[in-house]
Length: 336
Figure (spheres, rainbow, N blue to C red):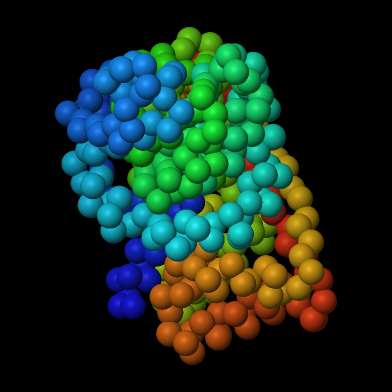
């Protein structure tokens, strides 16, 4: 694959938010939108045709929103089907472990309407669904159609769950639509994180809660050591790799939420050591193209792939037995 293909892969995040020139609302925090084009792929059984009025009733509803440039970004920079298919093999254990901390930061409770933005394959949304129960509703939204399809497969059994293709900086939902908005490892990939937070606040009801999680430092990230190794072979990717940690500083993250006018901001840090039976057990999903790191890896030459593999093996201190990977999340919660 040409070098620009590698760059696209590295810029694609778990949330699929990139430096793309996407145009969002014409006034941050307002209910004014660029004219959206929405397509309901499956009509609600109750006969509703308006996506916004049908969200409570259609378990497999997919709202596709395209702003200027978003269609191009979704086509060029989202996960390929095979990468989305392998995503859980690489990251499910991590997302599943940290999801309860994210939902706790958002004060998720029975009966709530919850938006999970940059939802990936819907693991955190599924955990939220188990909490809100039959009287609540959860929407799993992502910029990647391939990821949204994975979420639909995970959540499709539930009558009170929906999925949507959404740009987190220009959400298609009306003002005050949700009791809580959560975003797992996505905000740092937004072209303008503050604008994203403004949108989160807009769609929250008064008193509603937001919760986001971000990576802290390179040595405590599940896959970033792979991205950094790749960047050493393709120097132009260094900035994209560094972006993963752009919101990792506690004071910076707190300030961002406060500037976005969230109150009672609380920051917590959680770390967990994941133990795997072998280096191969850790690295194999990425060799198969799982996630953004996997997409970038398979785009390299055979020689570069071998070098990256050995660098990552050395960095993890592999001696042929079990390996341990420390992962740390910074979590921020606030109230509208």
